[in-house]
Length: 217
Image (cartoon, rainbow, N blue to C red; front, side):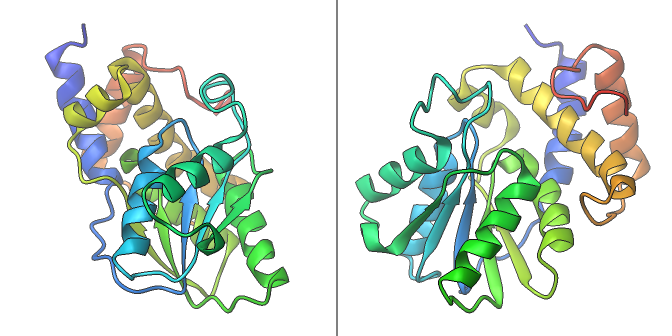
């Protein structure tokens, strides 16, 4: 059982991670691989609404996804999108990336190699990683406009779809930590993290939500 105080702090991090972008037509959609097939479903919906002509799913496997998605995150995402009505020829798979930086670099290179012009990207992630994904994309792929999208769910509703509230809180804490420490390591651009967000992050970290923290940070 997660304490109400922990949920209250987690909601602060959750709302902060949401970029609040208005989705619009973009050159391409990019779905960042993870344990959550909801990313593929959101990307498929954007395609079916006519907002992108092409979708790239990117991701290999992680300890979290190895059993759930044995053929690789991007492959399972593609299969789900096709199930939902996206034509197979409108989906590219990037199957090697193992972190967000690689997701963006490998996708950038894949599209460049195919001669696909990219001025803007509809960047689809889990709800609690929009801001982290945006900061990474701005670093890795300069000169492109990024519009963030994710499932329109609240924290508790999302955690219920995943079936593991503690995992979601661990990942929330890890995502905010990366916003604090990764700019100095050259992995993402620096974005302002307001004091109330930092305080909520520190409380959750100190109360043991450390399963997705970067070691030594």
